[in-house]
Amino acid sequence: MDPHAPTHAKGKIVLATVSPISCSIVDMSEKGATLRVSSTFGIPETFDLVRVPEAITLHCRVIRKAPNTLEVSFE
Image (cartoon, rainbow, N blue to C red):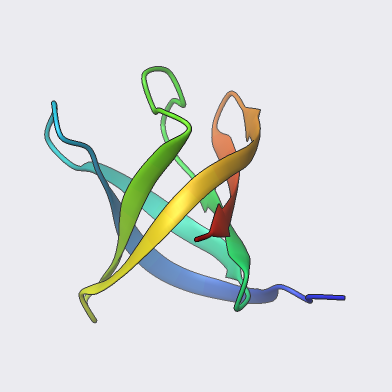
C-alpha cells in the first residue's frame, strides 16, 4: 500500500498551450498525489506538476477527476 501523507504545498500545473495553473497539493506519496484546482476543465490526462517553492518537477497522469480535484500518479 502507498499511503498518502497530508501536505499544504502549493504547485503549478504546467501545460504547453496555456499559462501554468495554480493548485494545492492536498496529499502526496512517492507514487502520486491529490491536487485541488479551481476547475479541472481543460486539464489533459498527462502534465507536469511543479512543486513550489522547491521547483521539483513531477510528470503526472490523471487517474481520477472530480470538479475541483485531481488524483494523479507520478510517471
